[in-house]
Image 1 (tube, helix red, strand yellow):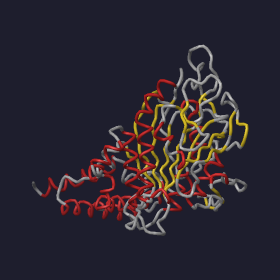
Image 2: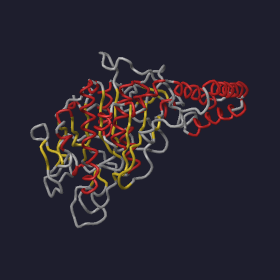
Image 3: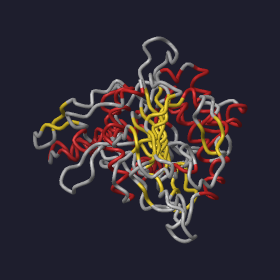
Length: 433
């Protein structure tokens, strides 16, 4: 290969980074590196979170809050006396002593994209002020500036069912683009386009040329966008050269563990999340799309539970066995629940079919959250919260409390306006601790 060809390939390698969103200034502003925590199980390990985002709206009636009136599924006992789950979740039911169930979720917003923003940020979108998501805040507060791995990774676990619009993308807002999530579109492949097709020497030569060009442009025509691009480019190179990228390699995991998590994209996503948390990434969000079960949720959830139940249960078991559950918060959430009515069959007319945000269910485990607890009660039809409603800001405040994040801390917007993640009067759900 000639030097000219090598330089051309080297440039193409860099352009691959650009096309992958690794060097671009907007979606890739995430590239604030994070030092992998070598002593995973030593005292003082910092906290992390795995958030399981079920996009589209999970039917509480077919999962963890089966109604007493005209239920479509049988219930099964859990490891906690008096607490029952849907029959399709036996393995997770056996781990109820690790889970804090929030049956009193009541958020009021039943429009997909707006409700997703509400459950990630604590605010309904208003078109004038952007708010960061919980993952962006965790990146800012728990991340390390000298790290090789990103502080916030967003993993797409595929779609199983009816989609509900674009995937939610967390926006860092006033925290700055370096706290945007790193997208992983396939858990089997990790962050793609980070392998060079030339020798390291040729690649480094091309990288130096590009950096010299960027520096010259910045000195002649300085701009904040160009400065951000140059900084992100340097950080992309650091990630490309880091041996800590091995955290994304699922094949290096023992076959027995890979088998336990299963062959589904969701199971592989959970395994990747555990590896990233183990390596020191503070926040991993896994999104499984397809939960917009208009026409009824029964058959769809029966199918999904075949891989959801064993993999989520094994994630808790795996984290607990290694001691990581003490410092890792696992959250199961969605944007809302599904309707409680049971009428003649038809679109939105059966149990678990339509959007419903008045009474639905989430759960948390680990990181100081007390397992074996149920917070909130609903009526026999599962349509009204009769005790201890929990709104979106209280839900996020509970996550922050578990992670040791001050959600009342003031930040500054670009305009110099003081901003806080959540409202000054918001408190966590104390019953969870």
